[in-house]
Image (cartoon, rainbow, N blue to C red; front, side):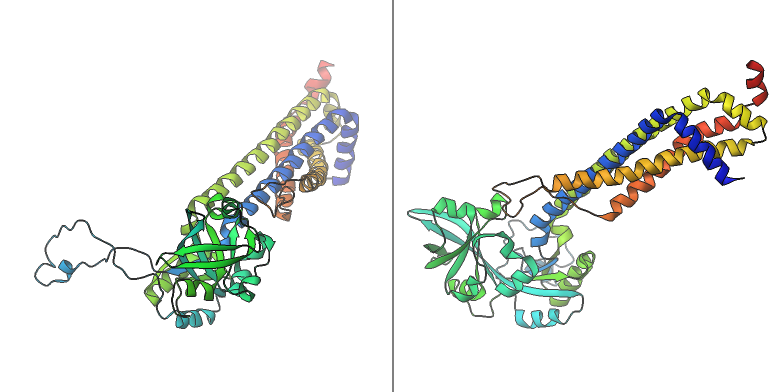
Length: 419
């Protein structure tokens, strides 16, 4: 089989039906371009939402959960342990929120090569006093350097600097929603009431905005030392140990390992954000489904054009077979024609897909709920372009195969006799 001759004949057939061939290529181009733009945008959006939630969540969190004792006194009794005991109105055991021996645990975790770093935290329920009104909220006492390294808190500070928490004593960064309710701004002194009923004054050194109302209306940050002082607890008092791993997929197994090792509660990021992760997967599936549908529709267009070309080129096919071309040669002529349309349309589709994505990437997208986002999010992952060109070639090859098989079975005697 002379591939050069087959290619020349395919190109001549392409030029003879240039308008229809261009229409078919444009269909592939449009399908690939929309596939690239849609997938890039949807995955960029997923990454944005992941950044809002998952990137601020530790891969493993160690804490003491409030829960009733698993073993009640009656089950520990030798007399009743083999009986079926019905116990009602079980109250949770007051174990306290403090993680005991926290410094030793943190020291042990920092030596684990699977871990990027560890960030201790003190979480406390407080009331923010606005005149005679008390607003329920949460103060997070953080080790500023570690928290910034793992969770990039500074990305969400719209006024002030997170490092001021470590410099200015008795300072606090409050959420924008909370600041609006209290009419507070940077430099103001606000008063809070702790869970123990103690009144304290803190200086506002920054305003944060995460884009989630539940956080912006209640959460605030202060230094670890300030939070411990507010709760009248010693420097060893820690309520949470936040861990970030080098491989997030190890989080479930590592959480289970630490739970057994330190005999405290541990939760992994997949469990903590299972609903959010499911939403991201569903959006990705929908994006791929729509993009592939566009490519299949383009494939049907190529099939119809090649099918019509065969009917119109019956004379040429008969002459080719009468002059010595086999059915296999004729088949490869039309498959080659289909591949030319698919590859050329696919390459232009990649180009226009990139251009479309770049245009979307510079369109202004400003909203009060997402202060750090200025344009629509786009993910320029080369995998999408690779999938696009592979699927374009595959779709057009399949679309051209059936007409090619039909052309290979044409009987030249019947065609010439009919003429």
